[in-house]
Length: 79
Image (cartoon, rainbow, N blue to C red; front, side, top):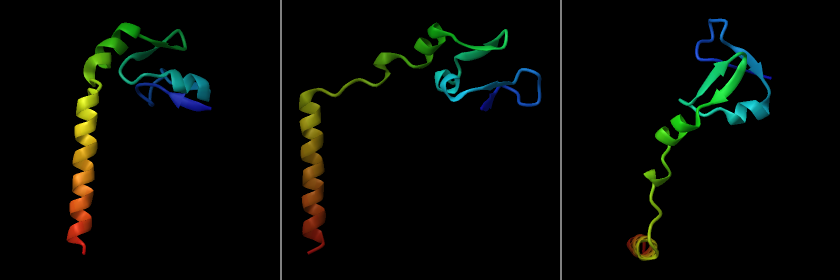
């Protein structure tokens, strides 16, 4: 069992099991009638799906080549 609440000194603290604990989203969960409720709109606002764009294949290749060059330079300088 875990305790969850916004203020651990108040009556707004509840005991929850691990499965319920995993459902909590920081900044978007609240206690309603003794149950944890997640505001999905708030989740979308806090964690937009486009906040971290996926690199293009070309960008991934450049990153891989940059890493390889850095590793080769490090190996060469240690000789």
